Length: 290
Image (cartoon, rainbow, N blue to C red; front, side, top):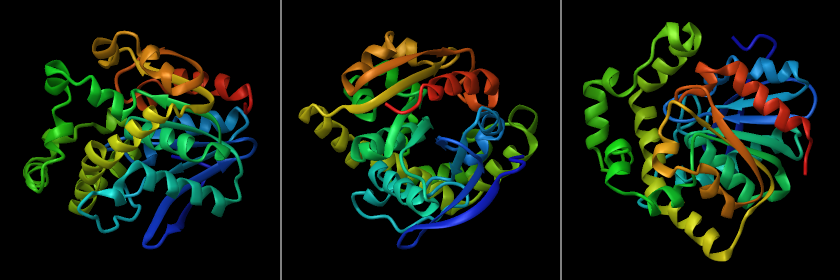
């Protein structure tokens, strides 16, 4: 797994160290995982992007995997997407990387979006996978959304989700070595079996309903948009089309240059359809920065 990549620990903020793998040469691309995965979810996609001529950077986000779990705060801001985007920005500085492409899946897509909005000088191309912005999802939330995505609201409750997950982690976090790959599965199981990681991952959701939504709403009110080309991909086997019908229409007010479509996959597209995903990303990245 990740043959030819270097694994590093990089200090990106006071008390926050990220585990990161870096490989390849050429124009850089950062891959940001979702919940409850770690960076190893990209283990099949990353080498394909290296083969396509890229330097590929795969961190564990703050709170996830083997990265630091800093203390939280009453407003959960230490786990905001703005804080996580700041981590990625400092990671790039530490690695000597200038403007880069960024692709994020699931919760990682919110970090990628926040990086592009807060630091447009750092992001030349943005890919967001299996998501709409947090503010858009919550503004459109109805009974169907609440039923399918109940965990957003349950995870925001204090203490109870930690207790529920600890009692039956296999009910919350499923996956097999056969489906995920043995090493990726082992890394993921170690993460979700760590109570400190579970609490930190839940803090991500708690921030989502508060400070992250407020940041999204402030951007929309100000008319702020992603300035670089943006690719939106979603899984045909997931429910974004059921919930939003025209996924690109949801994203259009957030972007200046938009393209996208579906991937023939379930939600974890990097594991289920890595060749198709890597092909779509490589074609998007090949166009170069804006």
